[in-house]
Length: 111
Image (cartoon, rainbow, N blue to C red; front, side, top):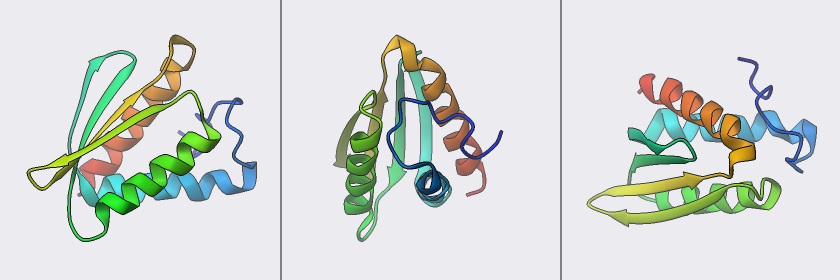
C-alpha cells in the first residue's frame, strides 16, 4: 500500500506533510505497539509500551491528528506501564480505520 494512498480526502493536513505524519505513526507503532485488537469494525484498541516522554508523544500526535482528521475519536489512558489508545470512526471512515489497523499491525511486527 502506498504510504498515503489510504488517507481520505476529508483530511485537511497539507498533502506535502502527509508522508511525515504517516512516518510518525509508523515509528510510534514499530517502537511501542504491544497489542492490537478490533472489538468492533468502527473501533481499534492499541496498547503501547510506556516510557519517558511516550505519553506526551502519543497525546501530541493524537492532538495533531484530531486537528486534521476530525472524523477520528481518540481516547488515551495510562496504567501498568502501558498507554492505551482507543480509536473510533464513523461508518463513512471505516476503511480508514481498516488501513490504520493494518499499518499499525505491520509496523508492530517489526518490533
